[in-house]
Length: 525
Ligand code: KIV
Ligand code: ZN
Image 1 (cartoon, rainbow, N blue to C red):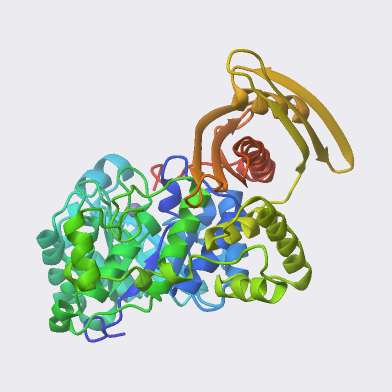
Image 2: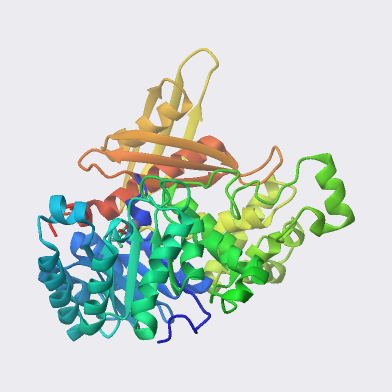
């Protein structure tokens, strides 16, 4: 593979692995599969689906993702440890394009204090592990953890040895987000001078100094042909390089990248907004409003001078169009009370959903009942109906009915009925406010107890009659892992009850798989 002559940058997405290391961003299997399928639609070349040896949950999600994907390569992270490599291999058994991603620290500080190994031992271990991984998988990537604080002479030596042992991609992480763009450029340029076209050079930049995207772009300008990134820049601490930003930089500044061999990606940018929203919804971590490309305000012009300029000639103040990333304002205003089943079906297809006839009927009935309560039904409302109706998580608890009474200066009471298998349970609770009473009632009925970490309400569209979207983040008794639940309804309190029940269902799903979750990332080798 020619590293510098080819102009397509491989987009390696690690939202499901490095992104999931973001505090509170843990996802269940169904949610990971939904994200992986959307990443494939987006055109991501390699999806890092997890770290197979770290937990049964990660192993299972990688296997399921491998079974479900058709075109994107599926990758598992692995330490340079025999048992890890075997777990990675097994998790990728059904992948059409499997990749094993080995990592081993190469910086003096990591080798001395974390690994307690000499450089010669690290070199031997890398060669041994890459050779072993190559016995099972043609596509092996080797990452020099903390590469950007490693000695250049050692990086060159281990890179050449890794190629000899069979690695096809060499990744140079800026693990602690320390470097500036010209420094990353220098590292990649130096490595390219020895690696040439014998392996793909890759950059993986963390954002501790806010440089992850610029660093990745600079790396590409100097010869890197793979960029590792996450949706919305998700990741632990200050996050990783944001996929949407690197992709839109390469697309928008073609004039600059002409000089570097017309760099481009396989990404279908029209899927960016949808992917960003899905990741934000599932993780409960929304991009800040002024975040480039996908922030709520990224395309809104408040100032009169700007609005005037835009109306006269769009390019006066806009360098990209919202439609480039899949935001389509013309299609936003949609169906109403008099819309028929055919129009509804068209809209569903246009929004990218694929429903069976039975599912379509259920969604249509729900749509009609919303039309009775709400004058204008927007695309977002329809997407919400479908998300709500066809949850990705198995429903252990089903909310059958709900009632809540509040008083400005008195008791708040919630009463509800929940079904678990064929058993119907009813109970009620008083609380210090409506939300408190609802959560207490659910806990009584379902015999659980949880600590609410976060609670957010958002109107899905504008208007007093907008559907409310509620997100709860809860730690239920028995684990340390938070789960997220979502509920949508015209009634905010009902949406709250739905969200808490969904979190509980997510908890039930995760419970067994999480039992042996160990964070291996910073331990041992
Ligand atoms: O930041 C890092 O060094 C990593 C490696 C495991 C690739 O995520
Ligand atoms: Zn990382």
